Length: 135
Image (cartoon, rainbow, N blue to C red; front, top):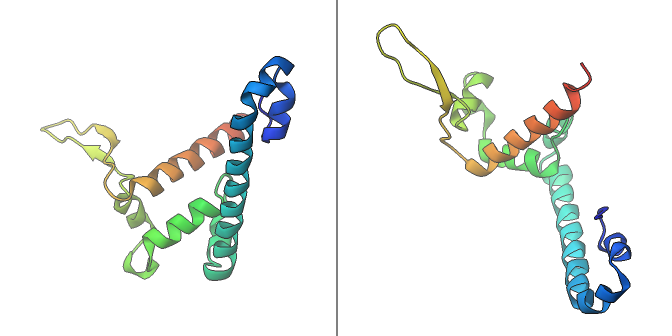
């Protein structure tokens, strides 16, 4: 029913409901406009102030919000000796429970920036659903 814009959704609403839903549809249109404005601001921020985000956006599923969040969270990439050190910094490292002969890998530790971690998990899910379904 909902294609992406409020106007397209409004066309799907039965005539009897349109009058009652009119004020709500107006609010939704305003919110949609504001979201588009913020998207443009983030895009401008990414291209003008943080040009390194363009490299990150070459990865399927990574957009302006994720790439800017990554750059701002990591700050100085030189503080990490290896690129593998970034994952644990963000809490993307399996928790361990070692005892005698067993060393099972548990869920991720979830330490670090939860907003960026959730964006990265969403990007992974987007990539996985797109790129692994064809094989």
